[in-house]
Length: 230
Length: 302
Image (tube, rainbow over all chains, first blue to last red; front, top):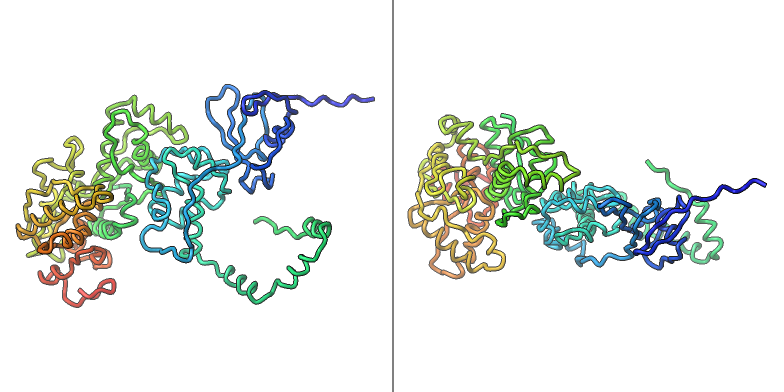
């Protein structure tokens, strides 16, 4: 009988404690292999939701690294910590009441003006966005640029945790994109769709869905059409 | 002259007219200024602590951007940006250790080589274009308009980076003479406007505004001319609060040097943007026959 090739094991340190895990797992799976169960800090497991922000150091490297636990392979000697939640300040505003005049961003997030351009936020971004540049664009009221640069943000909050000026970049980015949607690039398709929803175009489908059994819904989900990426 | 242009945040927010008038005037004088594709806040307030390298990052990063885009000269208009960036330019030139430390911290950027030279637009007018040349280009002389130049703190101090003599500057006076305006010399032209106290100690600024504006007015000035958006805010908008405090206070308009220059160069008022000031400069410009009465600008009738 052919002997199964032995899986190479590596050492990872979860909150300081050493665990042996098979090589080739993501950080998230490596931690689960070591016995941790994620109640928070895990979502889509596909790199989209931003729930699994993780901080780690590599053996012999003084730098802190930031990534998504579901997207990064565990390496030998890694020191790991999960960040299930970011206690960030979030401004309360009503998009309908936001005015274009002045700088709406500075009104809701005045701390944006404290940015010293250290670029630490950019270094912390697992999406490799130019975070500092979009904060700076917001500061100078360049809504379009700020919205474009922050478009791929998944709201993991790592930028805000690292910022020495206590700016909450990812919430600023969200506000910027809302302002952009309201004033700069009004979406015609959105209005069209809202009208369709209001006129009851999708009511029949939704009502049908609400009566389906769990297994049927699952089937429908796995058979759904997936829009091709551009 | 191949120049990069660094606007600064305020010129994109409250100081819109400062920028539009400056760019139009520069173009009329054949100065080519290309706004940097990427730039960040200048850092606003220059740190007075010796080893506070973190606060030199913002200006340094802007110098890296200038360098990246292939320029070695950059021009700015805001006194505050000029001051913060010029002092950083000097510090990293004089202290290679500091330059090295900052470069190492900004390891994602290319190293700054310390070769960028920052100018204030007023310096370009004086040294590159020359007042004689400006005089030749004047289409609408500001004859009869009495203007008090106001320097504030940032343009001439500290003297190592000042654009002119720190006690007896004349750079704005000479520009005014070139566009045929009458210079009103005011001993308070180098006083501080109160700067950021305007945020949490409004009454302090209101008091300084009363002192500075009244002094210029007493000497016959029709308006005050300056180069700093923060001074503009304090000396212009705070006149509203001064008038509430002192019922006998009568204010005068406060404008940017680029607005008067643009006007003199015959540029249309949609670039001068006098409409953005709190104290309306139109009545005095009409009274002195510089602008015709009834000319409609931005929905306002002069």
